Image (cartoon, rainbow, N blue to C red; front, side, top):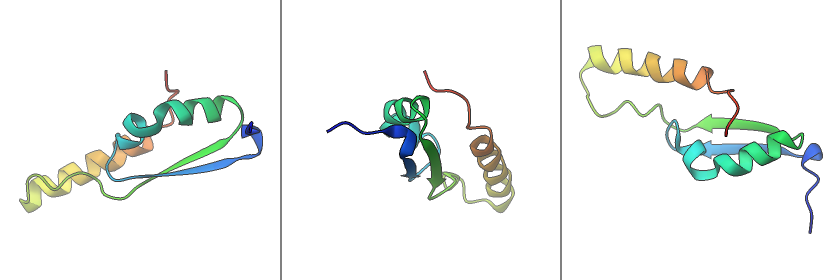
Length: 75
């Protein structure tokens, strides 16, 4: 069975930022190159290591900004 990626939309649910690249970066790249629409939804922002309110707020903003810069080509 061959997939016509130009007719597909892919939603990747990633537990943390960068997990989508490590888990299925190759598939996302192949599908995007072939014309698919690829979307990523992060389930957490990955900022729970330090629970101090000051650092938590800064880290959350940093992770949010990193997620927005994501549309760079893979490979």
